[in-house]
Amino acid sequence: MSLLRALHAEVLKLKRTLAFRVVFVLPLLVAVLQFFIVWRTKKFPAGFDLWHTMGTNSLQVWAVFMMPLLIALETALLNGIEHSDRQWKHIFALPVPRHAVYFSKVVVAQVLILISTAILALLTIVVGIIATHLRPELANVGPIPFGWFAKYTVLVWAASWLIIAIHTWISTRWAGFPIPLGAGIGGTFFALFAASASVGKYYPWLLPMNLFVDGRFKAALVLGIAGGLVATLVGCMEFVRRDVI
Amino acid sequence: MENPLIETRDLTRRFGEQLAVDSLNLSVPAAGVYGFLGPNGAGKTTAIRMLLGLIRPNAGEVRLFGQPLLAHRNSLMRRVGALVEMPSLYPHLTGRENLEVTRRLLGAPRELIDLALEIVRLTKDANRRVREYSLGMRQRAGLALALLNKPDLLILDEPTNGLDPAGIHEMRDLIRRLPGESGLTVFLSSHLLSEVEQIASHIGIIHEGHLLFQGTLAELQAKQQSELTVGVKQLDQAIECLKRAGWTVQKRAEEMLSVSASSSEDAVRINSLLVDHRLDVFHLALAQVSLEDIFLTLTRERTA
Image (cartoon, rainbow over all chains, first blue to last red; front, side, top):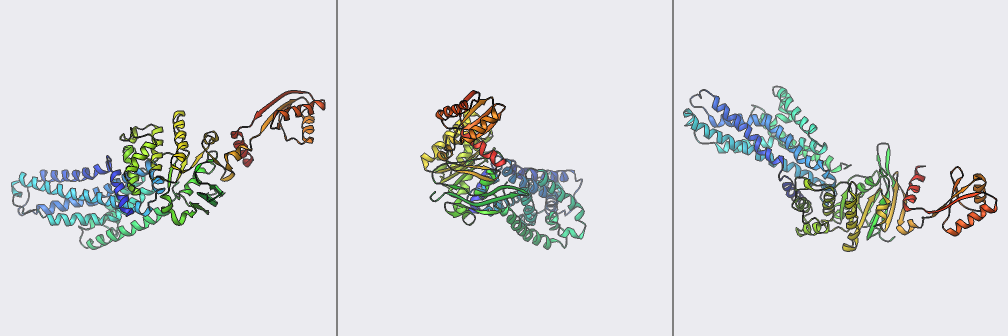
């Protein structure tokens, strides 16, 4: 009940914020990139699987680069509004359990990332439809695999829960952008090196991308979801005990 | 004191080596305004944060409405409204939306928003974004947040800090009206006695984490004494003479001393005594010691 009340309050806090706008802007950037790839491709081979190729490309760029940065940005913005006018002391002085406040922050971040990933899938489909009209050789690529797009939207999102949990804790712990964004940039940067190493199988910032890597699918999903839940609980335990100076 | 609304028992909090609050025993009665006084850095904010459960004490206990805070925090906080230092407001939302955020968290009825806005006289500006508010308006909006849930106890930490004289007057006026209108108890911290003495019925004075005084304003005022400043050529002889006669004397400057005296009759007696001893008195001035002076004396004595 208190979690629902906290979520209800969180929704109102998002009004007029950048946190809500970037949810739409970042997928648009990836979709525009996809459009230019299609635009600049000289010739598509016969029998080209447009939907799965474009969908995989889109979601991979998203999973390895844009989404981790979006998570860092979103969680920093969502919790930054609590740091700016020292809202925590007001919220913690209310008869609301602290764990409800923490879980509401995690859930809102998760929902925003899901919306953003779904928008990316939709925009990718739109780019695909435009491509079939622009390029005659793509006229017969077959029906749009909505099921595949829905499935991978949810999978990529679920594998990102651990990143969301880590960033929620960081951004509740430190005010401002330097540390939360620094962690996001650092996490994404090291992902480039970890990708080819065996440790990359377990590296949090690579989990969504690992869904597309042979032999790493199951670990990515289990670690993403279970790791995300455990990290959320651990973060919450620290949050509940925290002194508000 | 019967059934204190706030009671702390040996409340202690350290920050590293520094003892911010040391064995604090507060006892705040129901109804009226309790002024919690102390210079900056005395431990007021730390104590208030422990009263609200924002920080944990290293030792001791907080009891609100007769119940331990630690075990019943959520149910007790339903009866408490708080404004700690600067108000916590979302600048991108309007005043009304800010109240709505808190209302949703509390699960309180919607009509309480209008009531709170009305009390702090912010109804007209309720739909403006908080970033356009003046400091005084922000402070009133903060007070509205604290009043939203119709609390029985209102805890205000330095509510007039940073306000201009008009804002201070307005805030003071609001706080003074509250106990009478809704029967709530106000616990108000300040570093200015002059600000608190106009509205408080009870006073607690804290310095370096210790409670130096706690009681009614009348009890504090009873500590008020007049002071007679005497100018005399033979200072040492005069001090000796007055002390022998049982007066409390302090050397102030060369040829100047002060005697704790309460009336003009005392001044006459002291003057006669000195003149009878053939001492050359050239100055006599009787002055009332203000509450501010008592406050300063109490805090200085502790420092010394």
